[in-house]
Image 1 (cartoon, rainbow, N blue to C red):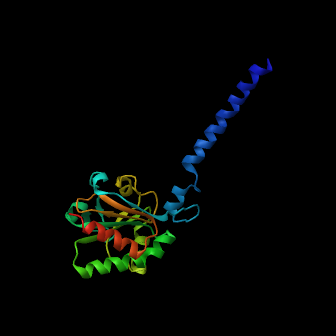
Image 2: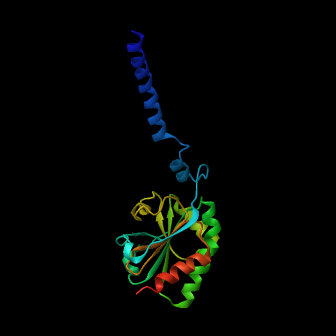
Image 3: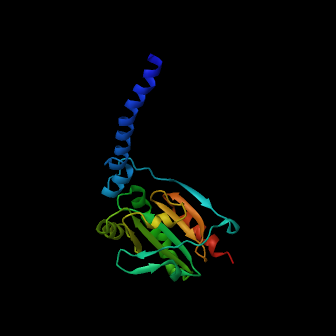
Length: 200
């Protein structure tokens, strides 16, 4: 008799426990998603800077990317057709993003002066616009950034971005050719871009 009662008792206990756990998942202010939205770095984990290079024959279809920059200008990837595009995903609350900013600015300025067909576009994600504008100015990143407060734009990057900072190098067709998952160095980024530039 006890053997029959025990599973029922456990099942009865399990229902409210499960309901409580699910409620916690959806409303927990300490979740990483909630912390990202409110600007907290608690629980945030950045990538380790690992580099992924994708051979031309194995690249996915072109990325679809369009939005409004922090300055209020409309932009879409098709405007950069035929050029190598560097996409840097960042946020004002992301410490490694602040650290890598001078490296990105250095590479951007170098290509600006060279006249090579290279475009830089940031994506300020899960952030508020005012903080994004202030941080870009303070960090010296003068290239434009798309405003992505909800994180919707990074969902279209074919699963290559899980958290900031992440830097993607798109080839002349708009396909992802390389990724740096985490803080990027100027020498690494320059090498990746130059390699894609040499492709025919």
